[in-house]
Length: 584
Image (cartoon, rainbow, N blue to C red; front, side, top):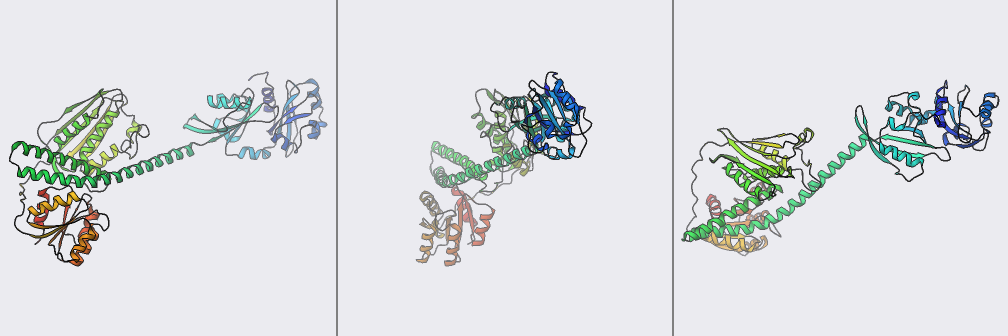
């Protein structure tokens, strides 16, 4: 403690008091007249203090000769009395006059002690003059142990020191600041409000409130808001994807059916090969659209049997195009085929997502190793990187939806959570191994299909006159191409560009044996058209076409009387298969 500080001397005097607690601060001239008094001291002295001699304000001092000796000798003194209220006054000489502290019984200090915040009073040298019970509890010290100590020793925070010094010097400082304080039970967050006492008393009052819980709630609220934002963004993207997929399905239906016809009708090998390439490209486009629709949750998972190692090579090829120059991909896949059953598009997206996470974990470059092995029971993929790795606390949350360590706006936080959901839906699993500075390894397992595929019958177009068919579709190209191939299957074809036109044709006397109707159309949609057509012609067979068929739609179609479903985009073989399965 600085012996030249009048407040340090005052603290020594106060520590000698047999009872009472400091209630406020005073500044007296050499004759004992009060020149300054803070609000708490003024209240303790009866409401008026400045301008009056201290022995007038505190009558017991008038009969105490010690008061006059303290004034005359300009020394420190403790002037005590006993009573239910005021307990005494402590004085210490200052540069001009004296500084003093009013001592009151503890009951008079109830408001000061009952405040839910830490309250600490410090002098110009940042020594603690006074602290309430909550502050003492957090300091883990008694009143005597705290008084006179530097506040920076008790709360080691540079920000706190800067704010307090600015307040004492009357410099502009933030009204409220937050800082972290390392406590035995962990780091806590406090809000600090600091104000300088009015007048010439060089004292500052610090009010500290523990807001750790509120801060954690705010962070959780921010996380939830971010999750909602991501969900809304994904929903908007999903709506866009649905619209794009709907239009593209119509385009691909035309391309696929025309390419299939060219393949079957041309004889030159080169032209057949060209048609095959068109069909392969169309199939790839179909898969991409299916991914969009699955992402938009507009279509259920599509189950098929395929070579998953060929899928792995396709994923690696796509990922390679997305790698920066300083990242290379090492591919280690067996040459023998290995078949699994599942949604090809979802599994392809899973492999791509995990690979891109590996890429993002290596901002300074590195190697992604994409490998696979299989036995009679299962196939295992591993995707490892030489990147930054993950600490344990990040690994624990890696599969949480919307959790991401990337900068805001750089990732959705859905890559690994969707990979986990996809693999578990395919009766598989996924595991992470990672260590900071040593990269990450993602292992994925899928059950293998090892039995040989049964031979399937080849669907051949139906020939011969089959009756009248009406094609209902708002897309002209789809309508015309579908009508053309139904003619090849032996039908007399009528075209309608809307549900309203189709209903009008039946009312005018058209009696089709088959109707092929699009599900999504302006005006009345496919289900409404189906209902009205069946009311006019109960025996008519109706095939609904759409790229948005899910369980709910299929149920509605069956309940409305639909007899067949045709997914867009479709080939001639798909059309022939659906028609051949209809009951005569």
